[in-house]
Length: 341
Image (cartoon, rainbow, N blue to C red; front, side, top):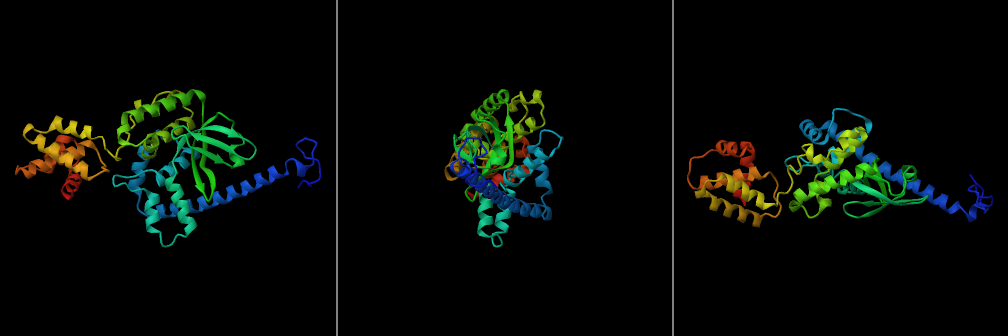
């Protein structure tokens, strides 16, 4: 420990108390706050892992892995990224997210701090950031898509980063301290341009379904995770290929407010004598339901089945579902929702 009245080891010639003492005290204070925040996060993560291992999520894990992974290669970094995606991001066809399921099942046993940590995790999202400022005590990163600026005070984490570098990261605010869970992945200048252009193009192709690009990436976080995996695996030839050419299925189960798509599917498939009733039925349904989940073909199949059944025609769900290339189960589920509305 350096005595207050000794010369500062930085070489300024000033006494330590007049030079770096206050800065070093702040660094130590932030280091302890960061360790405490990380401890709260890790404690909650361990509880969720225990819940995962004691519950039946086998099919859920298989589906999430299929959507997340780009390669059978594994390492600790990709495993950590996948575990975060599995717990906080992936949702099944019923919009179930493991973290939310865990919270609902354990509300009575979790204390206030634990609930707040879990809610912060659920609200967080992975994104791409530019380092805009850095000194000895803090770093400021800016989200490329929302333009939000976040202060990071984890000195040990960012000591090897420089201003203007780009990273993939997931900041989480835990009791006033922003931490980057799973650390960060740096992006080269060559790759950042390709990644940003590709994400903007994917958003452009799907923008009618979302308020903004940030919301698009929250509901399709696997896009950024796939880029992260490419970088971690260091496959330079692969990273320069835009993800839109690698069969990413964007927005499998999210809101499909692009009503034009539904209308086009109906116009291309329904018989002329039923078409107007089908379009009117869908228009009325949209007015009563602001948030609509599911594929265009699933809804179109349900609309046709509803109209033809009401017309007294002898038609089965299997026949209509085959026509629209969806399962009878999907058609049946959407048909029930139409009837309920």
